[in-house]
Image 1 (spheres, one colour):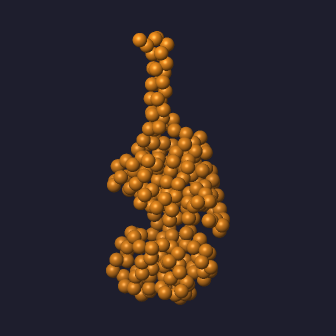
Image 2: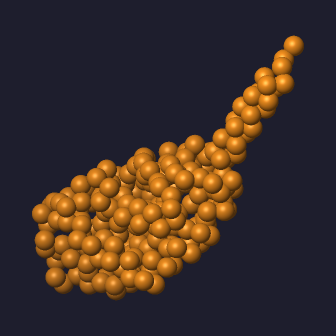
Image 3: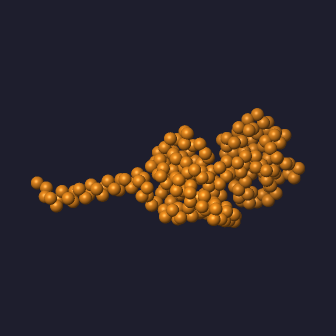
Length: 249
């Protein structure tokens, strides 16, 4: 027969187990989160931890008294892990994802906006709008929907698998214009020693980028948004955005 002391110890063990499970499933007491991000964006997040988002995440979570580990994965796998709750969130996504993935909650303040522009090497090429593209041989990365939508009927299109292929085509003059994000484009033109590549006009489109959390951490989303807004107000955000990242990876 169990003694009173034994029963008390058993109850204590059960209570401790329940507390541990409760903390694991997001009661608001979390202190460390496991986040994922696409591995296709080295200027924003990279293995060296020197990307724009790497710095923003570190600063934001420090202000919240939390820590976060960011793991770079193929885009589709990163999203799947976040949606299933095996990761606590995915930090590099466009708005509206929660309509398709009900387990995800958007942090309602964007990290930044990606600006999609045209790069060219020929001085006579100026691209002020989508309508200026059809006369030229144009390339972009396969699957980037912002370009697919606007250029569905354009002639002389080339689609590549990644940014390196994209800028190689421009370097070898296989195409006249390539379409990409401006920040990462500046990085890749340096990486490929292509100083003559220039942004040939204003942004053709902009897309705010948000963090998403698994719903077990839904209570953290407004706290993250509030602190990110404070970072923008006090100048910290702009300082991080403006940092020289020529040594990225």
